[in-house]
Image (cartoon, rainbow, N blue to C red; front, side):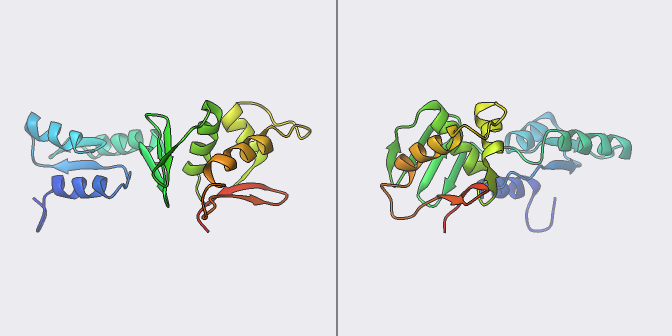
Length: 171
């Protein structure tokens, strides 16, 4: 009942564009079918008017506790596609043969595209270990990942930030 477009069209367009912004419907449409349709189109919650303001605040807090945004199922960076649910990565139309750790490392880097990630943070998140500065486990893993993800291609995605760590981005 919005001007020019209904809420279902709005959320369908938001989700189709890949945005994972949390959405809460506030609507007069109160049938079970309406609520189900809104939730199946990607809404995080659905409230029917009239509503108590305290309930609205509680539902907003609940959505915010779930995290900043929902994680997408597929990450795309230039010609690289990472399917997080199926544990597969494709670059330039070719499937990459990655080990479980390599896939975990790649998906961690890709989720944090553009951020400079320290070796310590990578070790904690990918290996679930406290980082020992005498070990080169992160550097070795990044080198192996680069052989598969970057070396066969002109555009490089994994970059070293000297003295700090690594950044995943298209330069």
